[in-house]
Length: 181
Image (cartoon, one colour):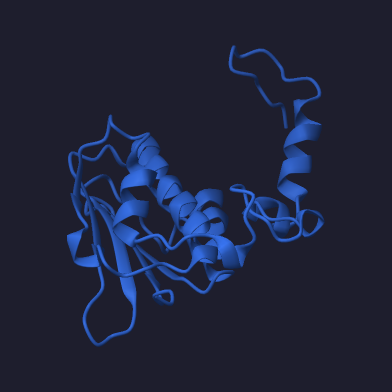
């Protein structure tokens, strides 16, 4: 396999860097390493990170996607905290989903909805696009949805579900338990 750099030239030693990245442990990919005492990118131990609401995380994740036609409907989850250990992986997963919409969907509309239905004891975030969609029976999930969304969120106790069909767009559902208040 020949890897190409941005300018189309061969990447030379790039293949070794790519393989090193792909072989990294799950701990390396989540941003918290045993050598740093369980501290995440913010430098705080998991128990000392402030609570974050799903509505805030959704908006943060969407900041780099101003080119997408995103409608936010997140007020129903405005007062439900996400556990601190979930905030970073959830934000990263949402950014991965939006990146996939940008790269693959050709969507005319994207709706990001956050809710915390009373009595269910969970919050939900969905990302829906009206783009191309894909046949899930014939096309396996790529690295982003499989590893950066599903696996990363499962490691912090968040369920994920991806539904798609050709011509019908894609829906990504994320469900988790609220943090303590």
